[in-house]
Amino acid sequence: MRLQDKIAIVTGAGAGFGGGIARRFAEEGAHVIVNDINATNADGVVADIRNNGGSAICLAGDVSSDGDTAALVAGAVETFGGLDIMVNNAGVPQRNMPMDEVPEGAFDQIFNVNVKSLYWAAIHALPEMRKRGGGAFVNTSSTAALSPRAGLVWYNASKGAVNTITKGMAIELASDNIRVNAICPVAGETQMLAEFAGGEVTPEMRQMFLNSIPLGRFSQPLDIANAALFLASDEAAMITGVCMEVDGGRCI
Ligand SMILES: NC(=O)c1ccc[n+]([C@@H]2O[C@H](COP(=O)([O-])OP(=O)(O)OC[C@H]3O[C@@H](n4cnc5c(N)ncnc54)[C@H](O)[C@@H]3O)[C@@H](O)[C@H]2O)c1
Image (tube, rainbow, N blue to C red; front, side, top):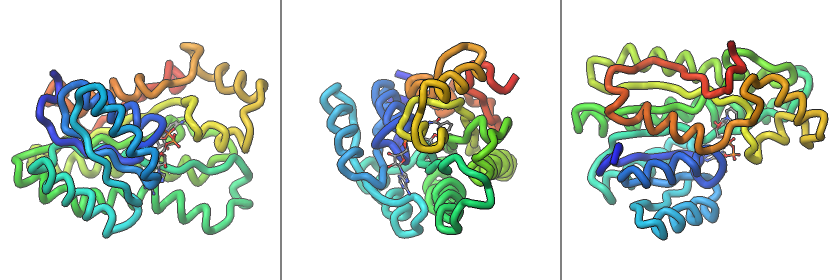
């Protein structure tokens, strides 16, 4: 078991990549706190994990909220006794459109959920990790940070911030034995893909995405979960500040 008895929060874990990460962590022995703004979906992932003999609880909440993030960390400590791993995975897309047509509310939501959530996670998770003498953050970024696609300017920028925050946190927290890494997935067939495509994944749009991925397929939750598992585990004890592409070669 690669995460035996580690206590891990996974945000945005009611669907998509986060659901895959939560399930994979539980298979490897972690106690998983499944967060999502959609409580029904998060409950479903918890039920799956428990049915497979794993350990998990649901703590629904909004990662862009101070109070909800405080409650999330407090719940991990109350239920399992501490916090070792924080996976900041929750994110929202930008609907593909010209940058100057994106409404202010959509811009604010992208930065609140994709970026400000890392601020709240740092504020609330760091004291608990320091009490345990170390920890690991894994942030879900995107190839959008490294090789931006047209029509997604503000989303691309939010993921650029995730990469810079990851590296800044890594250097600042190294002396606390807290590692901070990010994963940069290529397009995945989650509910987010339609937004990146502008509302509907037409066969032409699907082929356009696939043509940009040398390995010839979309990323799957298990691809992202396996990378997160490695970065969160002691196998990556010497790795911090890395923004790792899981992208089938897209960013080469
Ligand atoms: N799907 C892709 O093509 C792709 C590619 C690169 C990176 N990503 C990133 O991967 C991460 C996961 O996305 P996904 O593809 O699994 O999408 P998804 O929409 O399937 O899952 C995202 C989950 O986050 C939850 N969520 C949204 N806002 C939240 C909030 N404020 N608080 C808590 N939970 C919230 C949603 O309810 C949803 O369950 C995101 O950070 C996304 O930006 C996705």
